[in-house]
Structures are given as structure tokens and as C-alpha cells.
Image 1 (cartoon, rainbow, N blue to C red):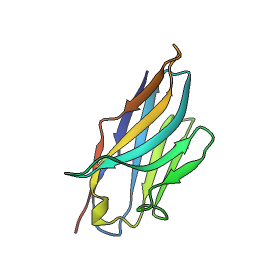
Image 2: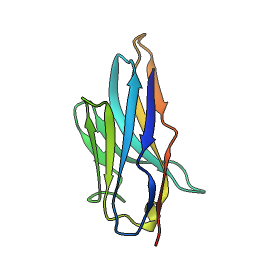
Image 3: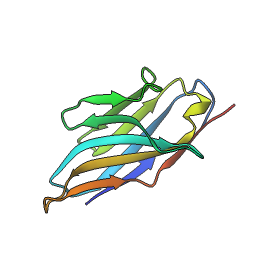
Length: 120
């Protein structure tokens, strides 16, 4: 099973930047996609950005042009570079991984989340 640990959240002023990291550990037959989700108070969790095993990337319309998802396979780490942050980006950000275990079962792993607060 794959374990995920996010870091890099914090308090930032509007227009500022943050980079979130998601360290992965554990063993899997394959990790087919990794995603960043976020959940603001009173709202449903939403997909922010995703990257496939083939490096295909997708973004929510609300973050296109401002956020960039990337990964460093050598470091087993997923990143989310967030620029031009807005107060509406305030949320808990979660790392997510989808893949197949050594035993051949599908898995859907989540990190514990990291708080991002955009406020002056």
C-alpha cells in the first residue's frame, strides 16, 4: 500500500505563492495517477489538479494558469506550485494516489491534508 504525507501549507497573502509537497512511500505494482484535491469549510472536496503515469496533466478551471502539478520520480514526491493565490484558494489540500497493489487490487490512497490559508 502507498502512504502519502503532505507538507508546505501555511498562511500567505493574496497574490503570493506556495509549493505543496506530497511524499510517497510503500510498495505498489503501479501508481497510475496522482492528484491534488482541496476542501474548503462547508464545501465538497474538489479535484484541483492531476497527473497520470504518462505525464498527462489536468487542472480545475479555477486554477488553470496559476497552479502547476509536477512530480520527481527519483524523490517519490508530488508537487503543487501555487501562484497568484486568492482568498478562495483557502482550503485543506489533500494528496491522492490511484494504482494497483502488488496483489493486483486497486487502491485509492489519501494523505492527511495540509492547510492553505490565503488572507491579508
